[in-house]
Image (cartoon, rainbow, N blue to C red; front, side, top):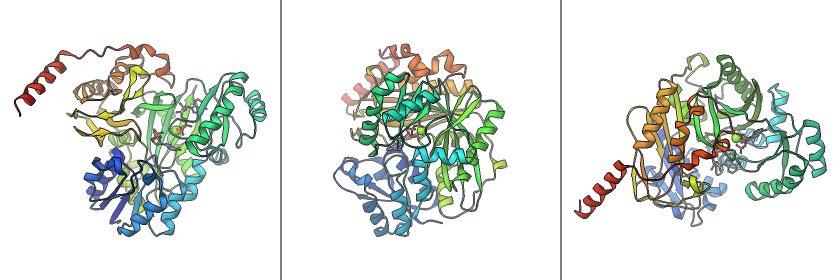
Length: 471
Ligand code: ADP
Ligand code: ADP
Ligand code: MG
């Protein structure tokens, strides 16, 4: 088994990995840049080292991070999500320096990180894809020809894109002309690559993704699916496992497709195969070669600790479960609580958390790195907490979600939590039938009142009295 792991990440996912290490008797090493000196992942890891003053550069410097892993006697490195997690260079440098990379092979990361190469690999493996370009677009003229062939609306997408950025829908030729250069410049800025491709836009689909686990002994299994259709601007807000809108046949089919996709590229470790579902048609969209933000809900319904499995797989152990050992129970929902003012066009709301009370009680899980007094730095993602609830039935999970959101007190910054209460109360959502257009088609849900409720006011008064009394 691995003995010491360097965590090349920050925030809640770094804390999540520290926790897995602690439970497995593995020493954890955190890294931090200056704004993160007082971050929870730094406090919680067994050791922590600075990687410089610049907020971001240190987290993105693969050579420096792997050097640190070698110098501190680590035998492995966990990349988390975001940052360098899908950068094949990090995996390659780890391999060269004798550090076990907790993720797939560098070449597989490279191949799946290139969305056009991934599409080609899937078509070859018989996994259905959206109609689109074979490779990257060379010119606007080519884009117009392809769009005429596949029919509008189309999606222009950054080939190395991620995080919901670098994607634009074009409803007609005029929009395509207008967006073509924009997507190229967005892609260049965000991903350092000007490559773009085109796909047919699937109108109002469901986003369904399957979690897979593959060991280095040829075993590949899936842990069922997640429904991530509740999105804003192609970014996930609320995730659900299993999807309340699949038939058992669709569920089995998507699981099998995901396993086939992983096997086709020689995938090892945990991964996610993302699909779009519309009119009983399933289309491969992309594969994420890392632990996903919403891995938590799969853990809640299956009982499998995905980060632990990642570490065991990287250590060369066979999977602890066969496909027939995997079952699921109930429903889990994850709310991405972002430091954003939903009512002000989701404007980031960074700053100091004056008070934080964690929600609790049955079926509630919180993955976060915030605490009372912590200042959310403006340099990173705005997601500051993941609230996960589990319930035996769909209705129980929904009610538990509303109760847990209500339990939580997060003061000093604006968050998306009140907006999620509105989603939870909506009959369409409650009926378990919604697609990726839900958020956009319900702008009225952003009209909620921010008047504080009586019990919150009572609590604020009690806190003020206690502070005054010097308690
Ligand atoms: P998930 O696919 O796990 O749901 P997200 O798409 O929300 O994850 O991305 C998680 C984090 O990783 C976000 O901070 C996002 O900006 C970042 N990220 C994802 N893909 C990329 C990429 N290709 N380049 C840079 N950052 C990325
Ligand atoms: P990222 O790498 O940023 O996660 P994805 O390719 O996974 O990008 O797409 C993100 C989201 O954009 C999807 O969940 C979906 O809502 C939307 N999307 C992407 N491609 C299409 C498409 N061809 N048709 C309709 N929606 C799409
Ligand atoms: Mg995606």
